[in-house]
Length: 277
Image (tube, rainbow, N blue to C red; front, side, top):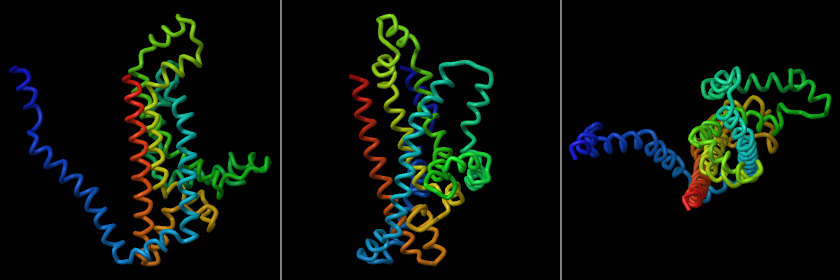
């Protein structure tokens, strides 16, 4: 009993910690969102709809959502494989590769965009051989997906890696002992445990991709109705001092992101219940 009372005193009381939490969330989340709503209120509802559904803006939505979804899906596959290799195998340079996973977090996004653009242009190390095959990367949607895949890779790896570290190989060995093949072991034993983590990594990668600007702006080419992203539309409106219109586009992106996160959260809950059962 005394140990339980002592453990409750390790951190400050509920009132103090809740006050700090609400103040922190209010200052960094609620106040900016309220400010956005006030800026959007400068326009009527009809004007907001007109701005948010303009043909050029709609095209930018398609580019942002489509490329972000594709980049997140690519990282679901290769990010999971990378996490598996880092956890299950020991080889020279493993720690170096594990550390390089954090590079997109530490590297300024503008620097990443410039580096990727120089590599994938028709005269770049990667772009030049691809151009001989008739494949263009820079200034196309392929380049946007490439940049977003680079930026969002750590979200998938770091979401899956802790789960794999806690998943004992004994379960896989037991499956092999019972005669199960590699695909059956992965589908019946490994995948159910990874589903919540994979969904978390996918949602984080998708959300980051939707709001990414610095690494994409250089490699996209910013061709109207082709490679313009939604964040560029917001910046363009701000440069034209059309703050209400910029906020209207931002509010639509915010609403869409919330809906995506809500749906993914529901899927995570269902997957967790499935694993428990």
